[in-house]
Image (cartoon, rainbow, N blue to C red; front, side, top):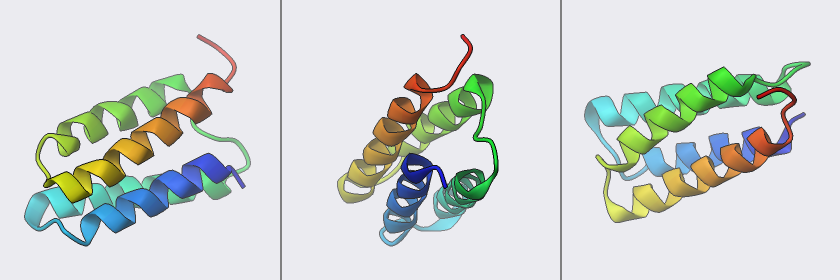
Length: 88
């Protein structure tokens, strides 16, 4: 298991608790994708991580302060995970 991805997924699930509508759905989709990646044999590559980070930056601007804190934590975890990914 890729713990940082799992923790990021958990942070996003927590963020959905104070979010509604389409933004909540987007958060949930990101949380699900990261949960799947956390249990995969190989984690996401730099490109996939960059797309997740981009979406999370957009979402962070749309949510309340409480949810934004959780989204920021997820982004920090993804960035930390990305440092250990081979490649670019």
